[in-house]
Image 1 (tube, helix red, strand yellow):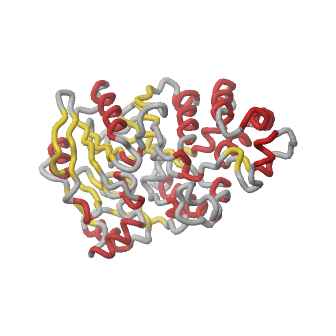
Image 2 (tube, rainbow, N blue to C red):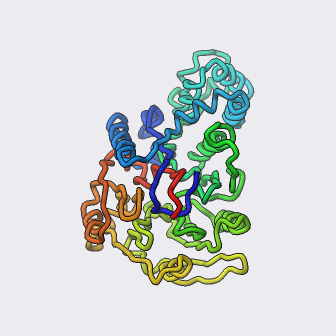
Image 3 (cartoon, rainbow, N blue to C red):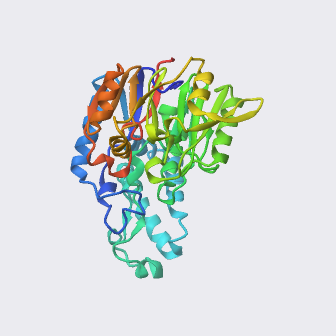
Length: 390
């Protein structure tokens, strides 16, 4: 378990195959659950299976989050912790809480994992012991909310060298995701002894905003999801632990289309990024080191200096402003590097992929017509756990 760059040879990655939680999305709740549409679940699963197979065919070990949660729930301490987290929801009231506790206690680990991910609908509790809260709930509401955004495993944890930061998600619909990730890293035998850099009780920080630009150099986007305080907290911790000598805090527009730094910029080579041209040369960065905070200055200039290279090559999204805007919305910038000059991207971003290939980057194209309805690409859907040292 080791990650010191965005682009070195990928060995192990954490994915989540979408399941019943996507089927819980309706026109009533998709906005609050952060989806722009209602995905076709079986097609989304087919697309995700093809994504996982594309990685396996290039000798990448794929871990599935649902399997890890079920395995973690076989451990009594972890089961008690995750069950208590769900039952602490203030919406429940005492009578419904007791009914839900009894229901969860009866479930085997695999079924309990499914409930924690896909949620529990009002109509799935047949007992009449739910009290006033249960009786007054809309029959279409959820006693335990589903987690459709669990698909985007990048956001709930990020590895920096041999340690992991379990993040603090900003949007209410996503906050329970990190209770699952936190339990896996603390209890699952695969991660025994792992040191945690961050935890969900701290300031808001999301993994989509964290780029490991080079060994001991991080960039952290600050915007809709990650606060300046969250960026500062992680910067302090990685610098104090000797995991980084420089952290760049990069303000980005607080908009849906640019919710994370990796929606506008990802690395495809040790010295190259694919980047939304409308903002590429206007992004600024504050430089955080052990001694001081400096800036702001142009992001590309500050990044190259921190990385010890002459310049950071920029490959534009699209060829013209309209295409660039369309393909940025469709996650054209959100690539996952399998190795230097080898990345995974959505096939629909035709011009951006052509730009990458003209720049010497091999593109593994995957379909994402349904997966993209949650506004995330291959990088969003993957949490690298092990890469070769750069």
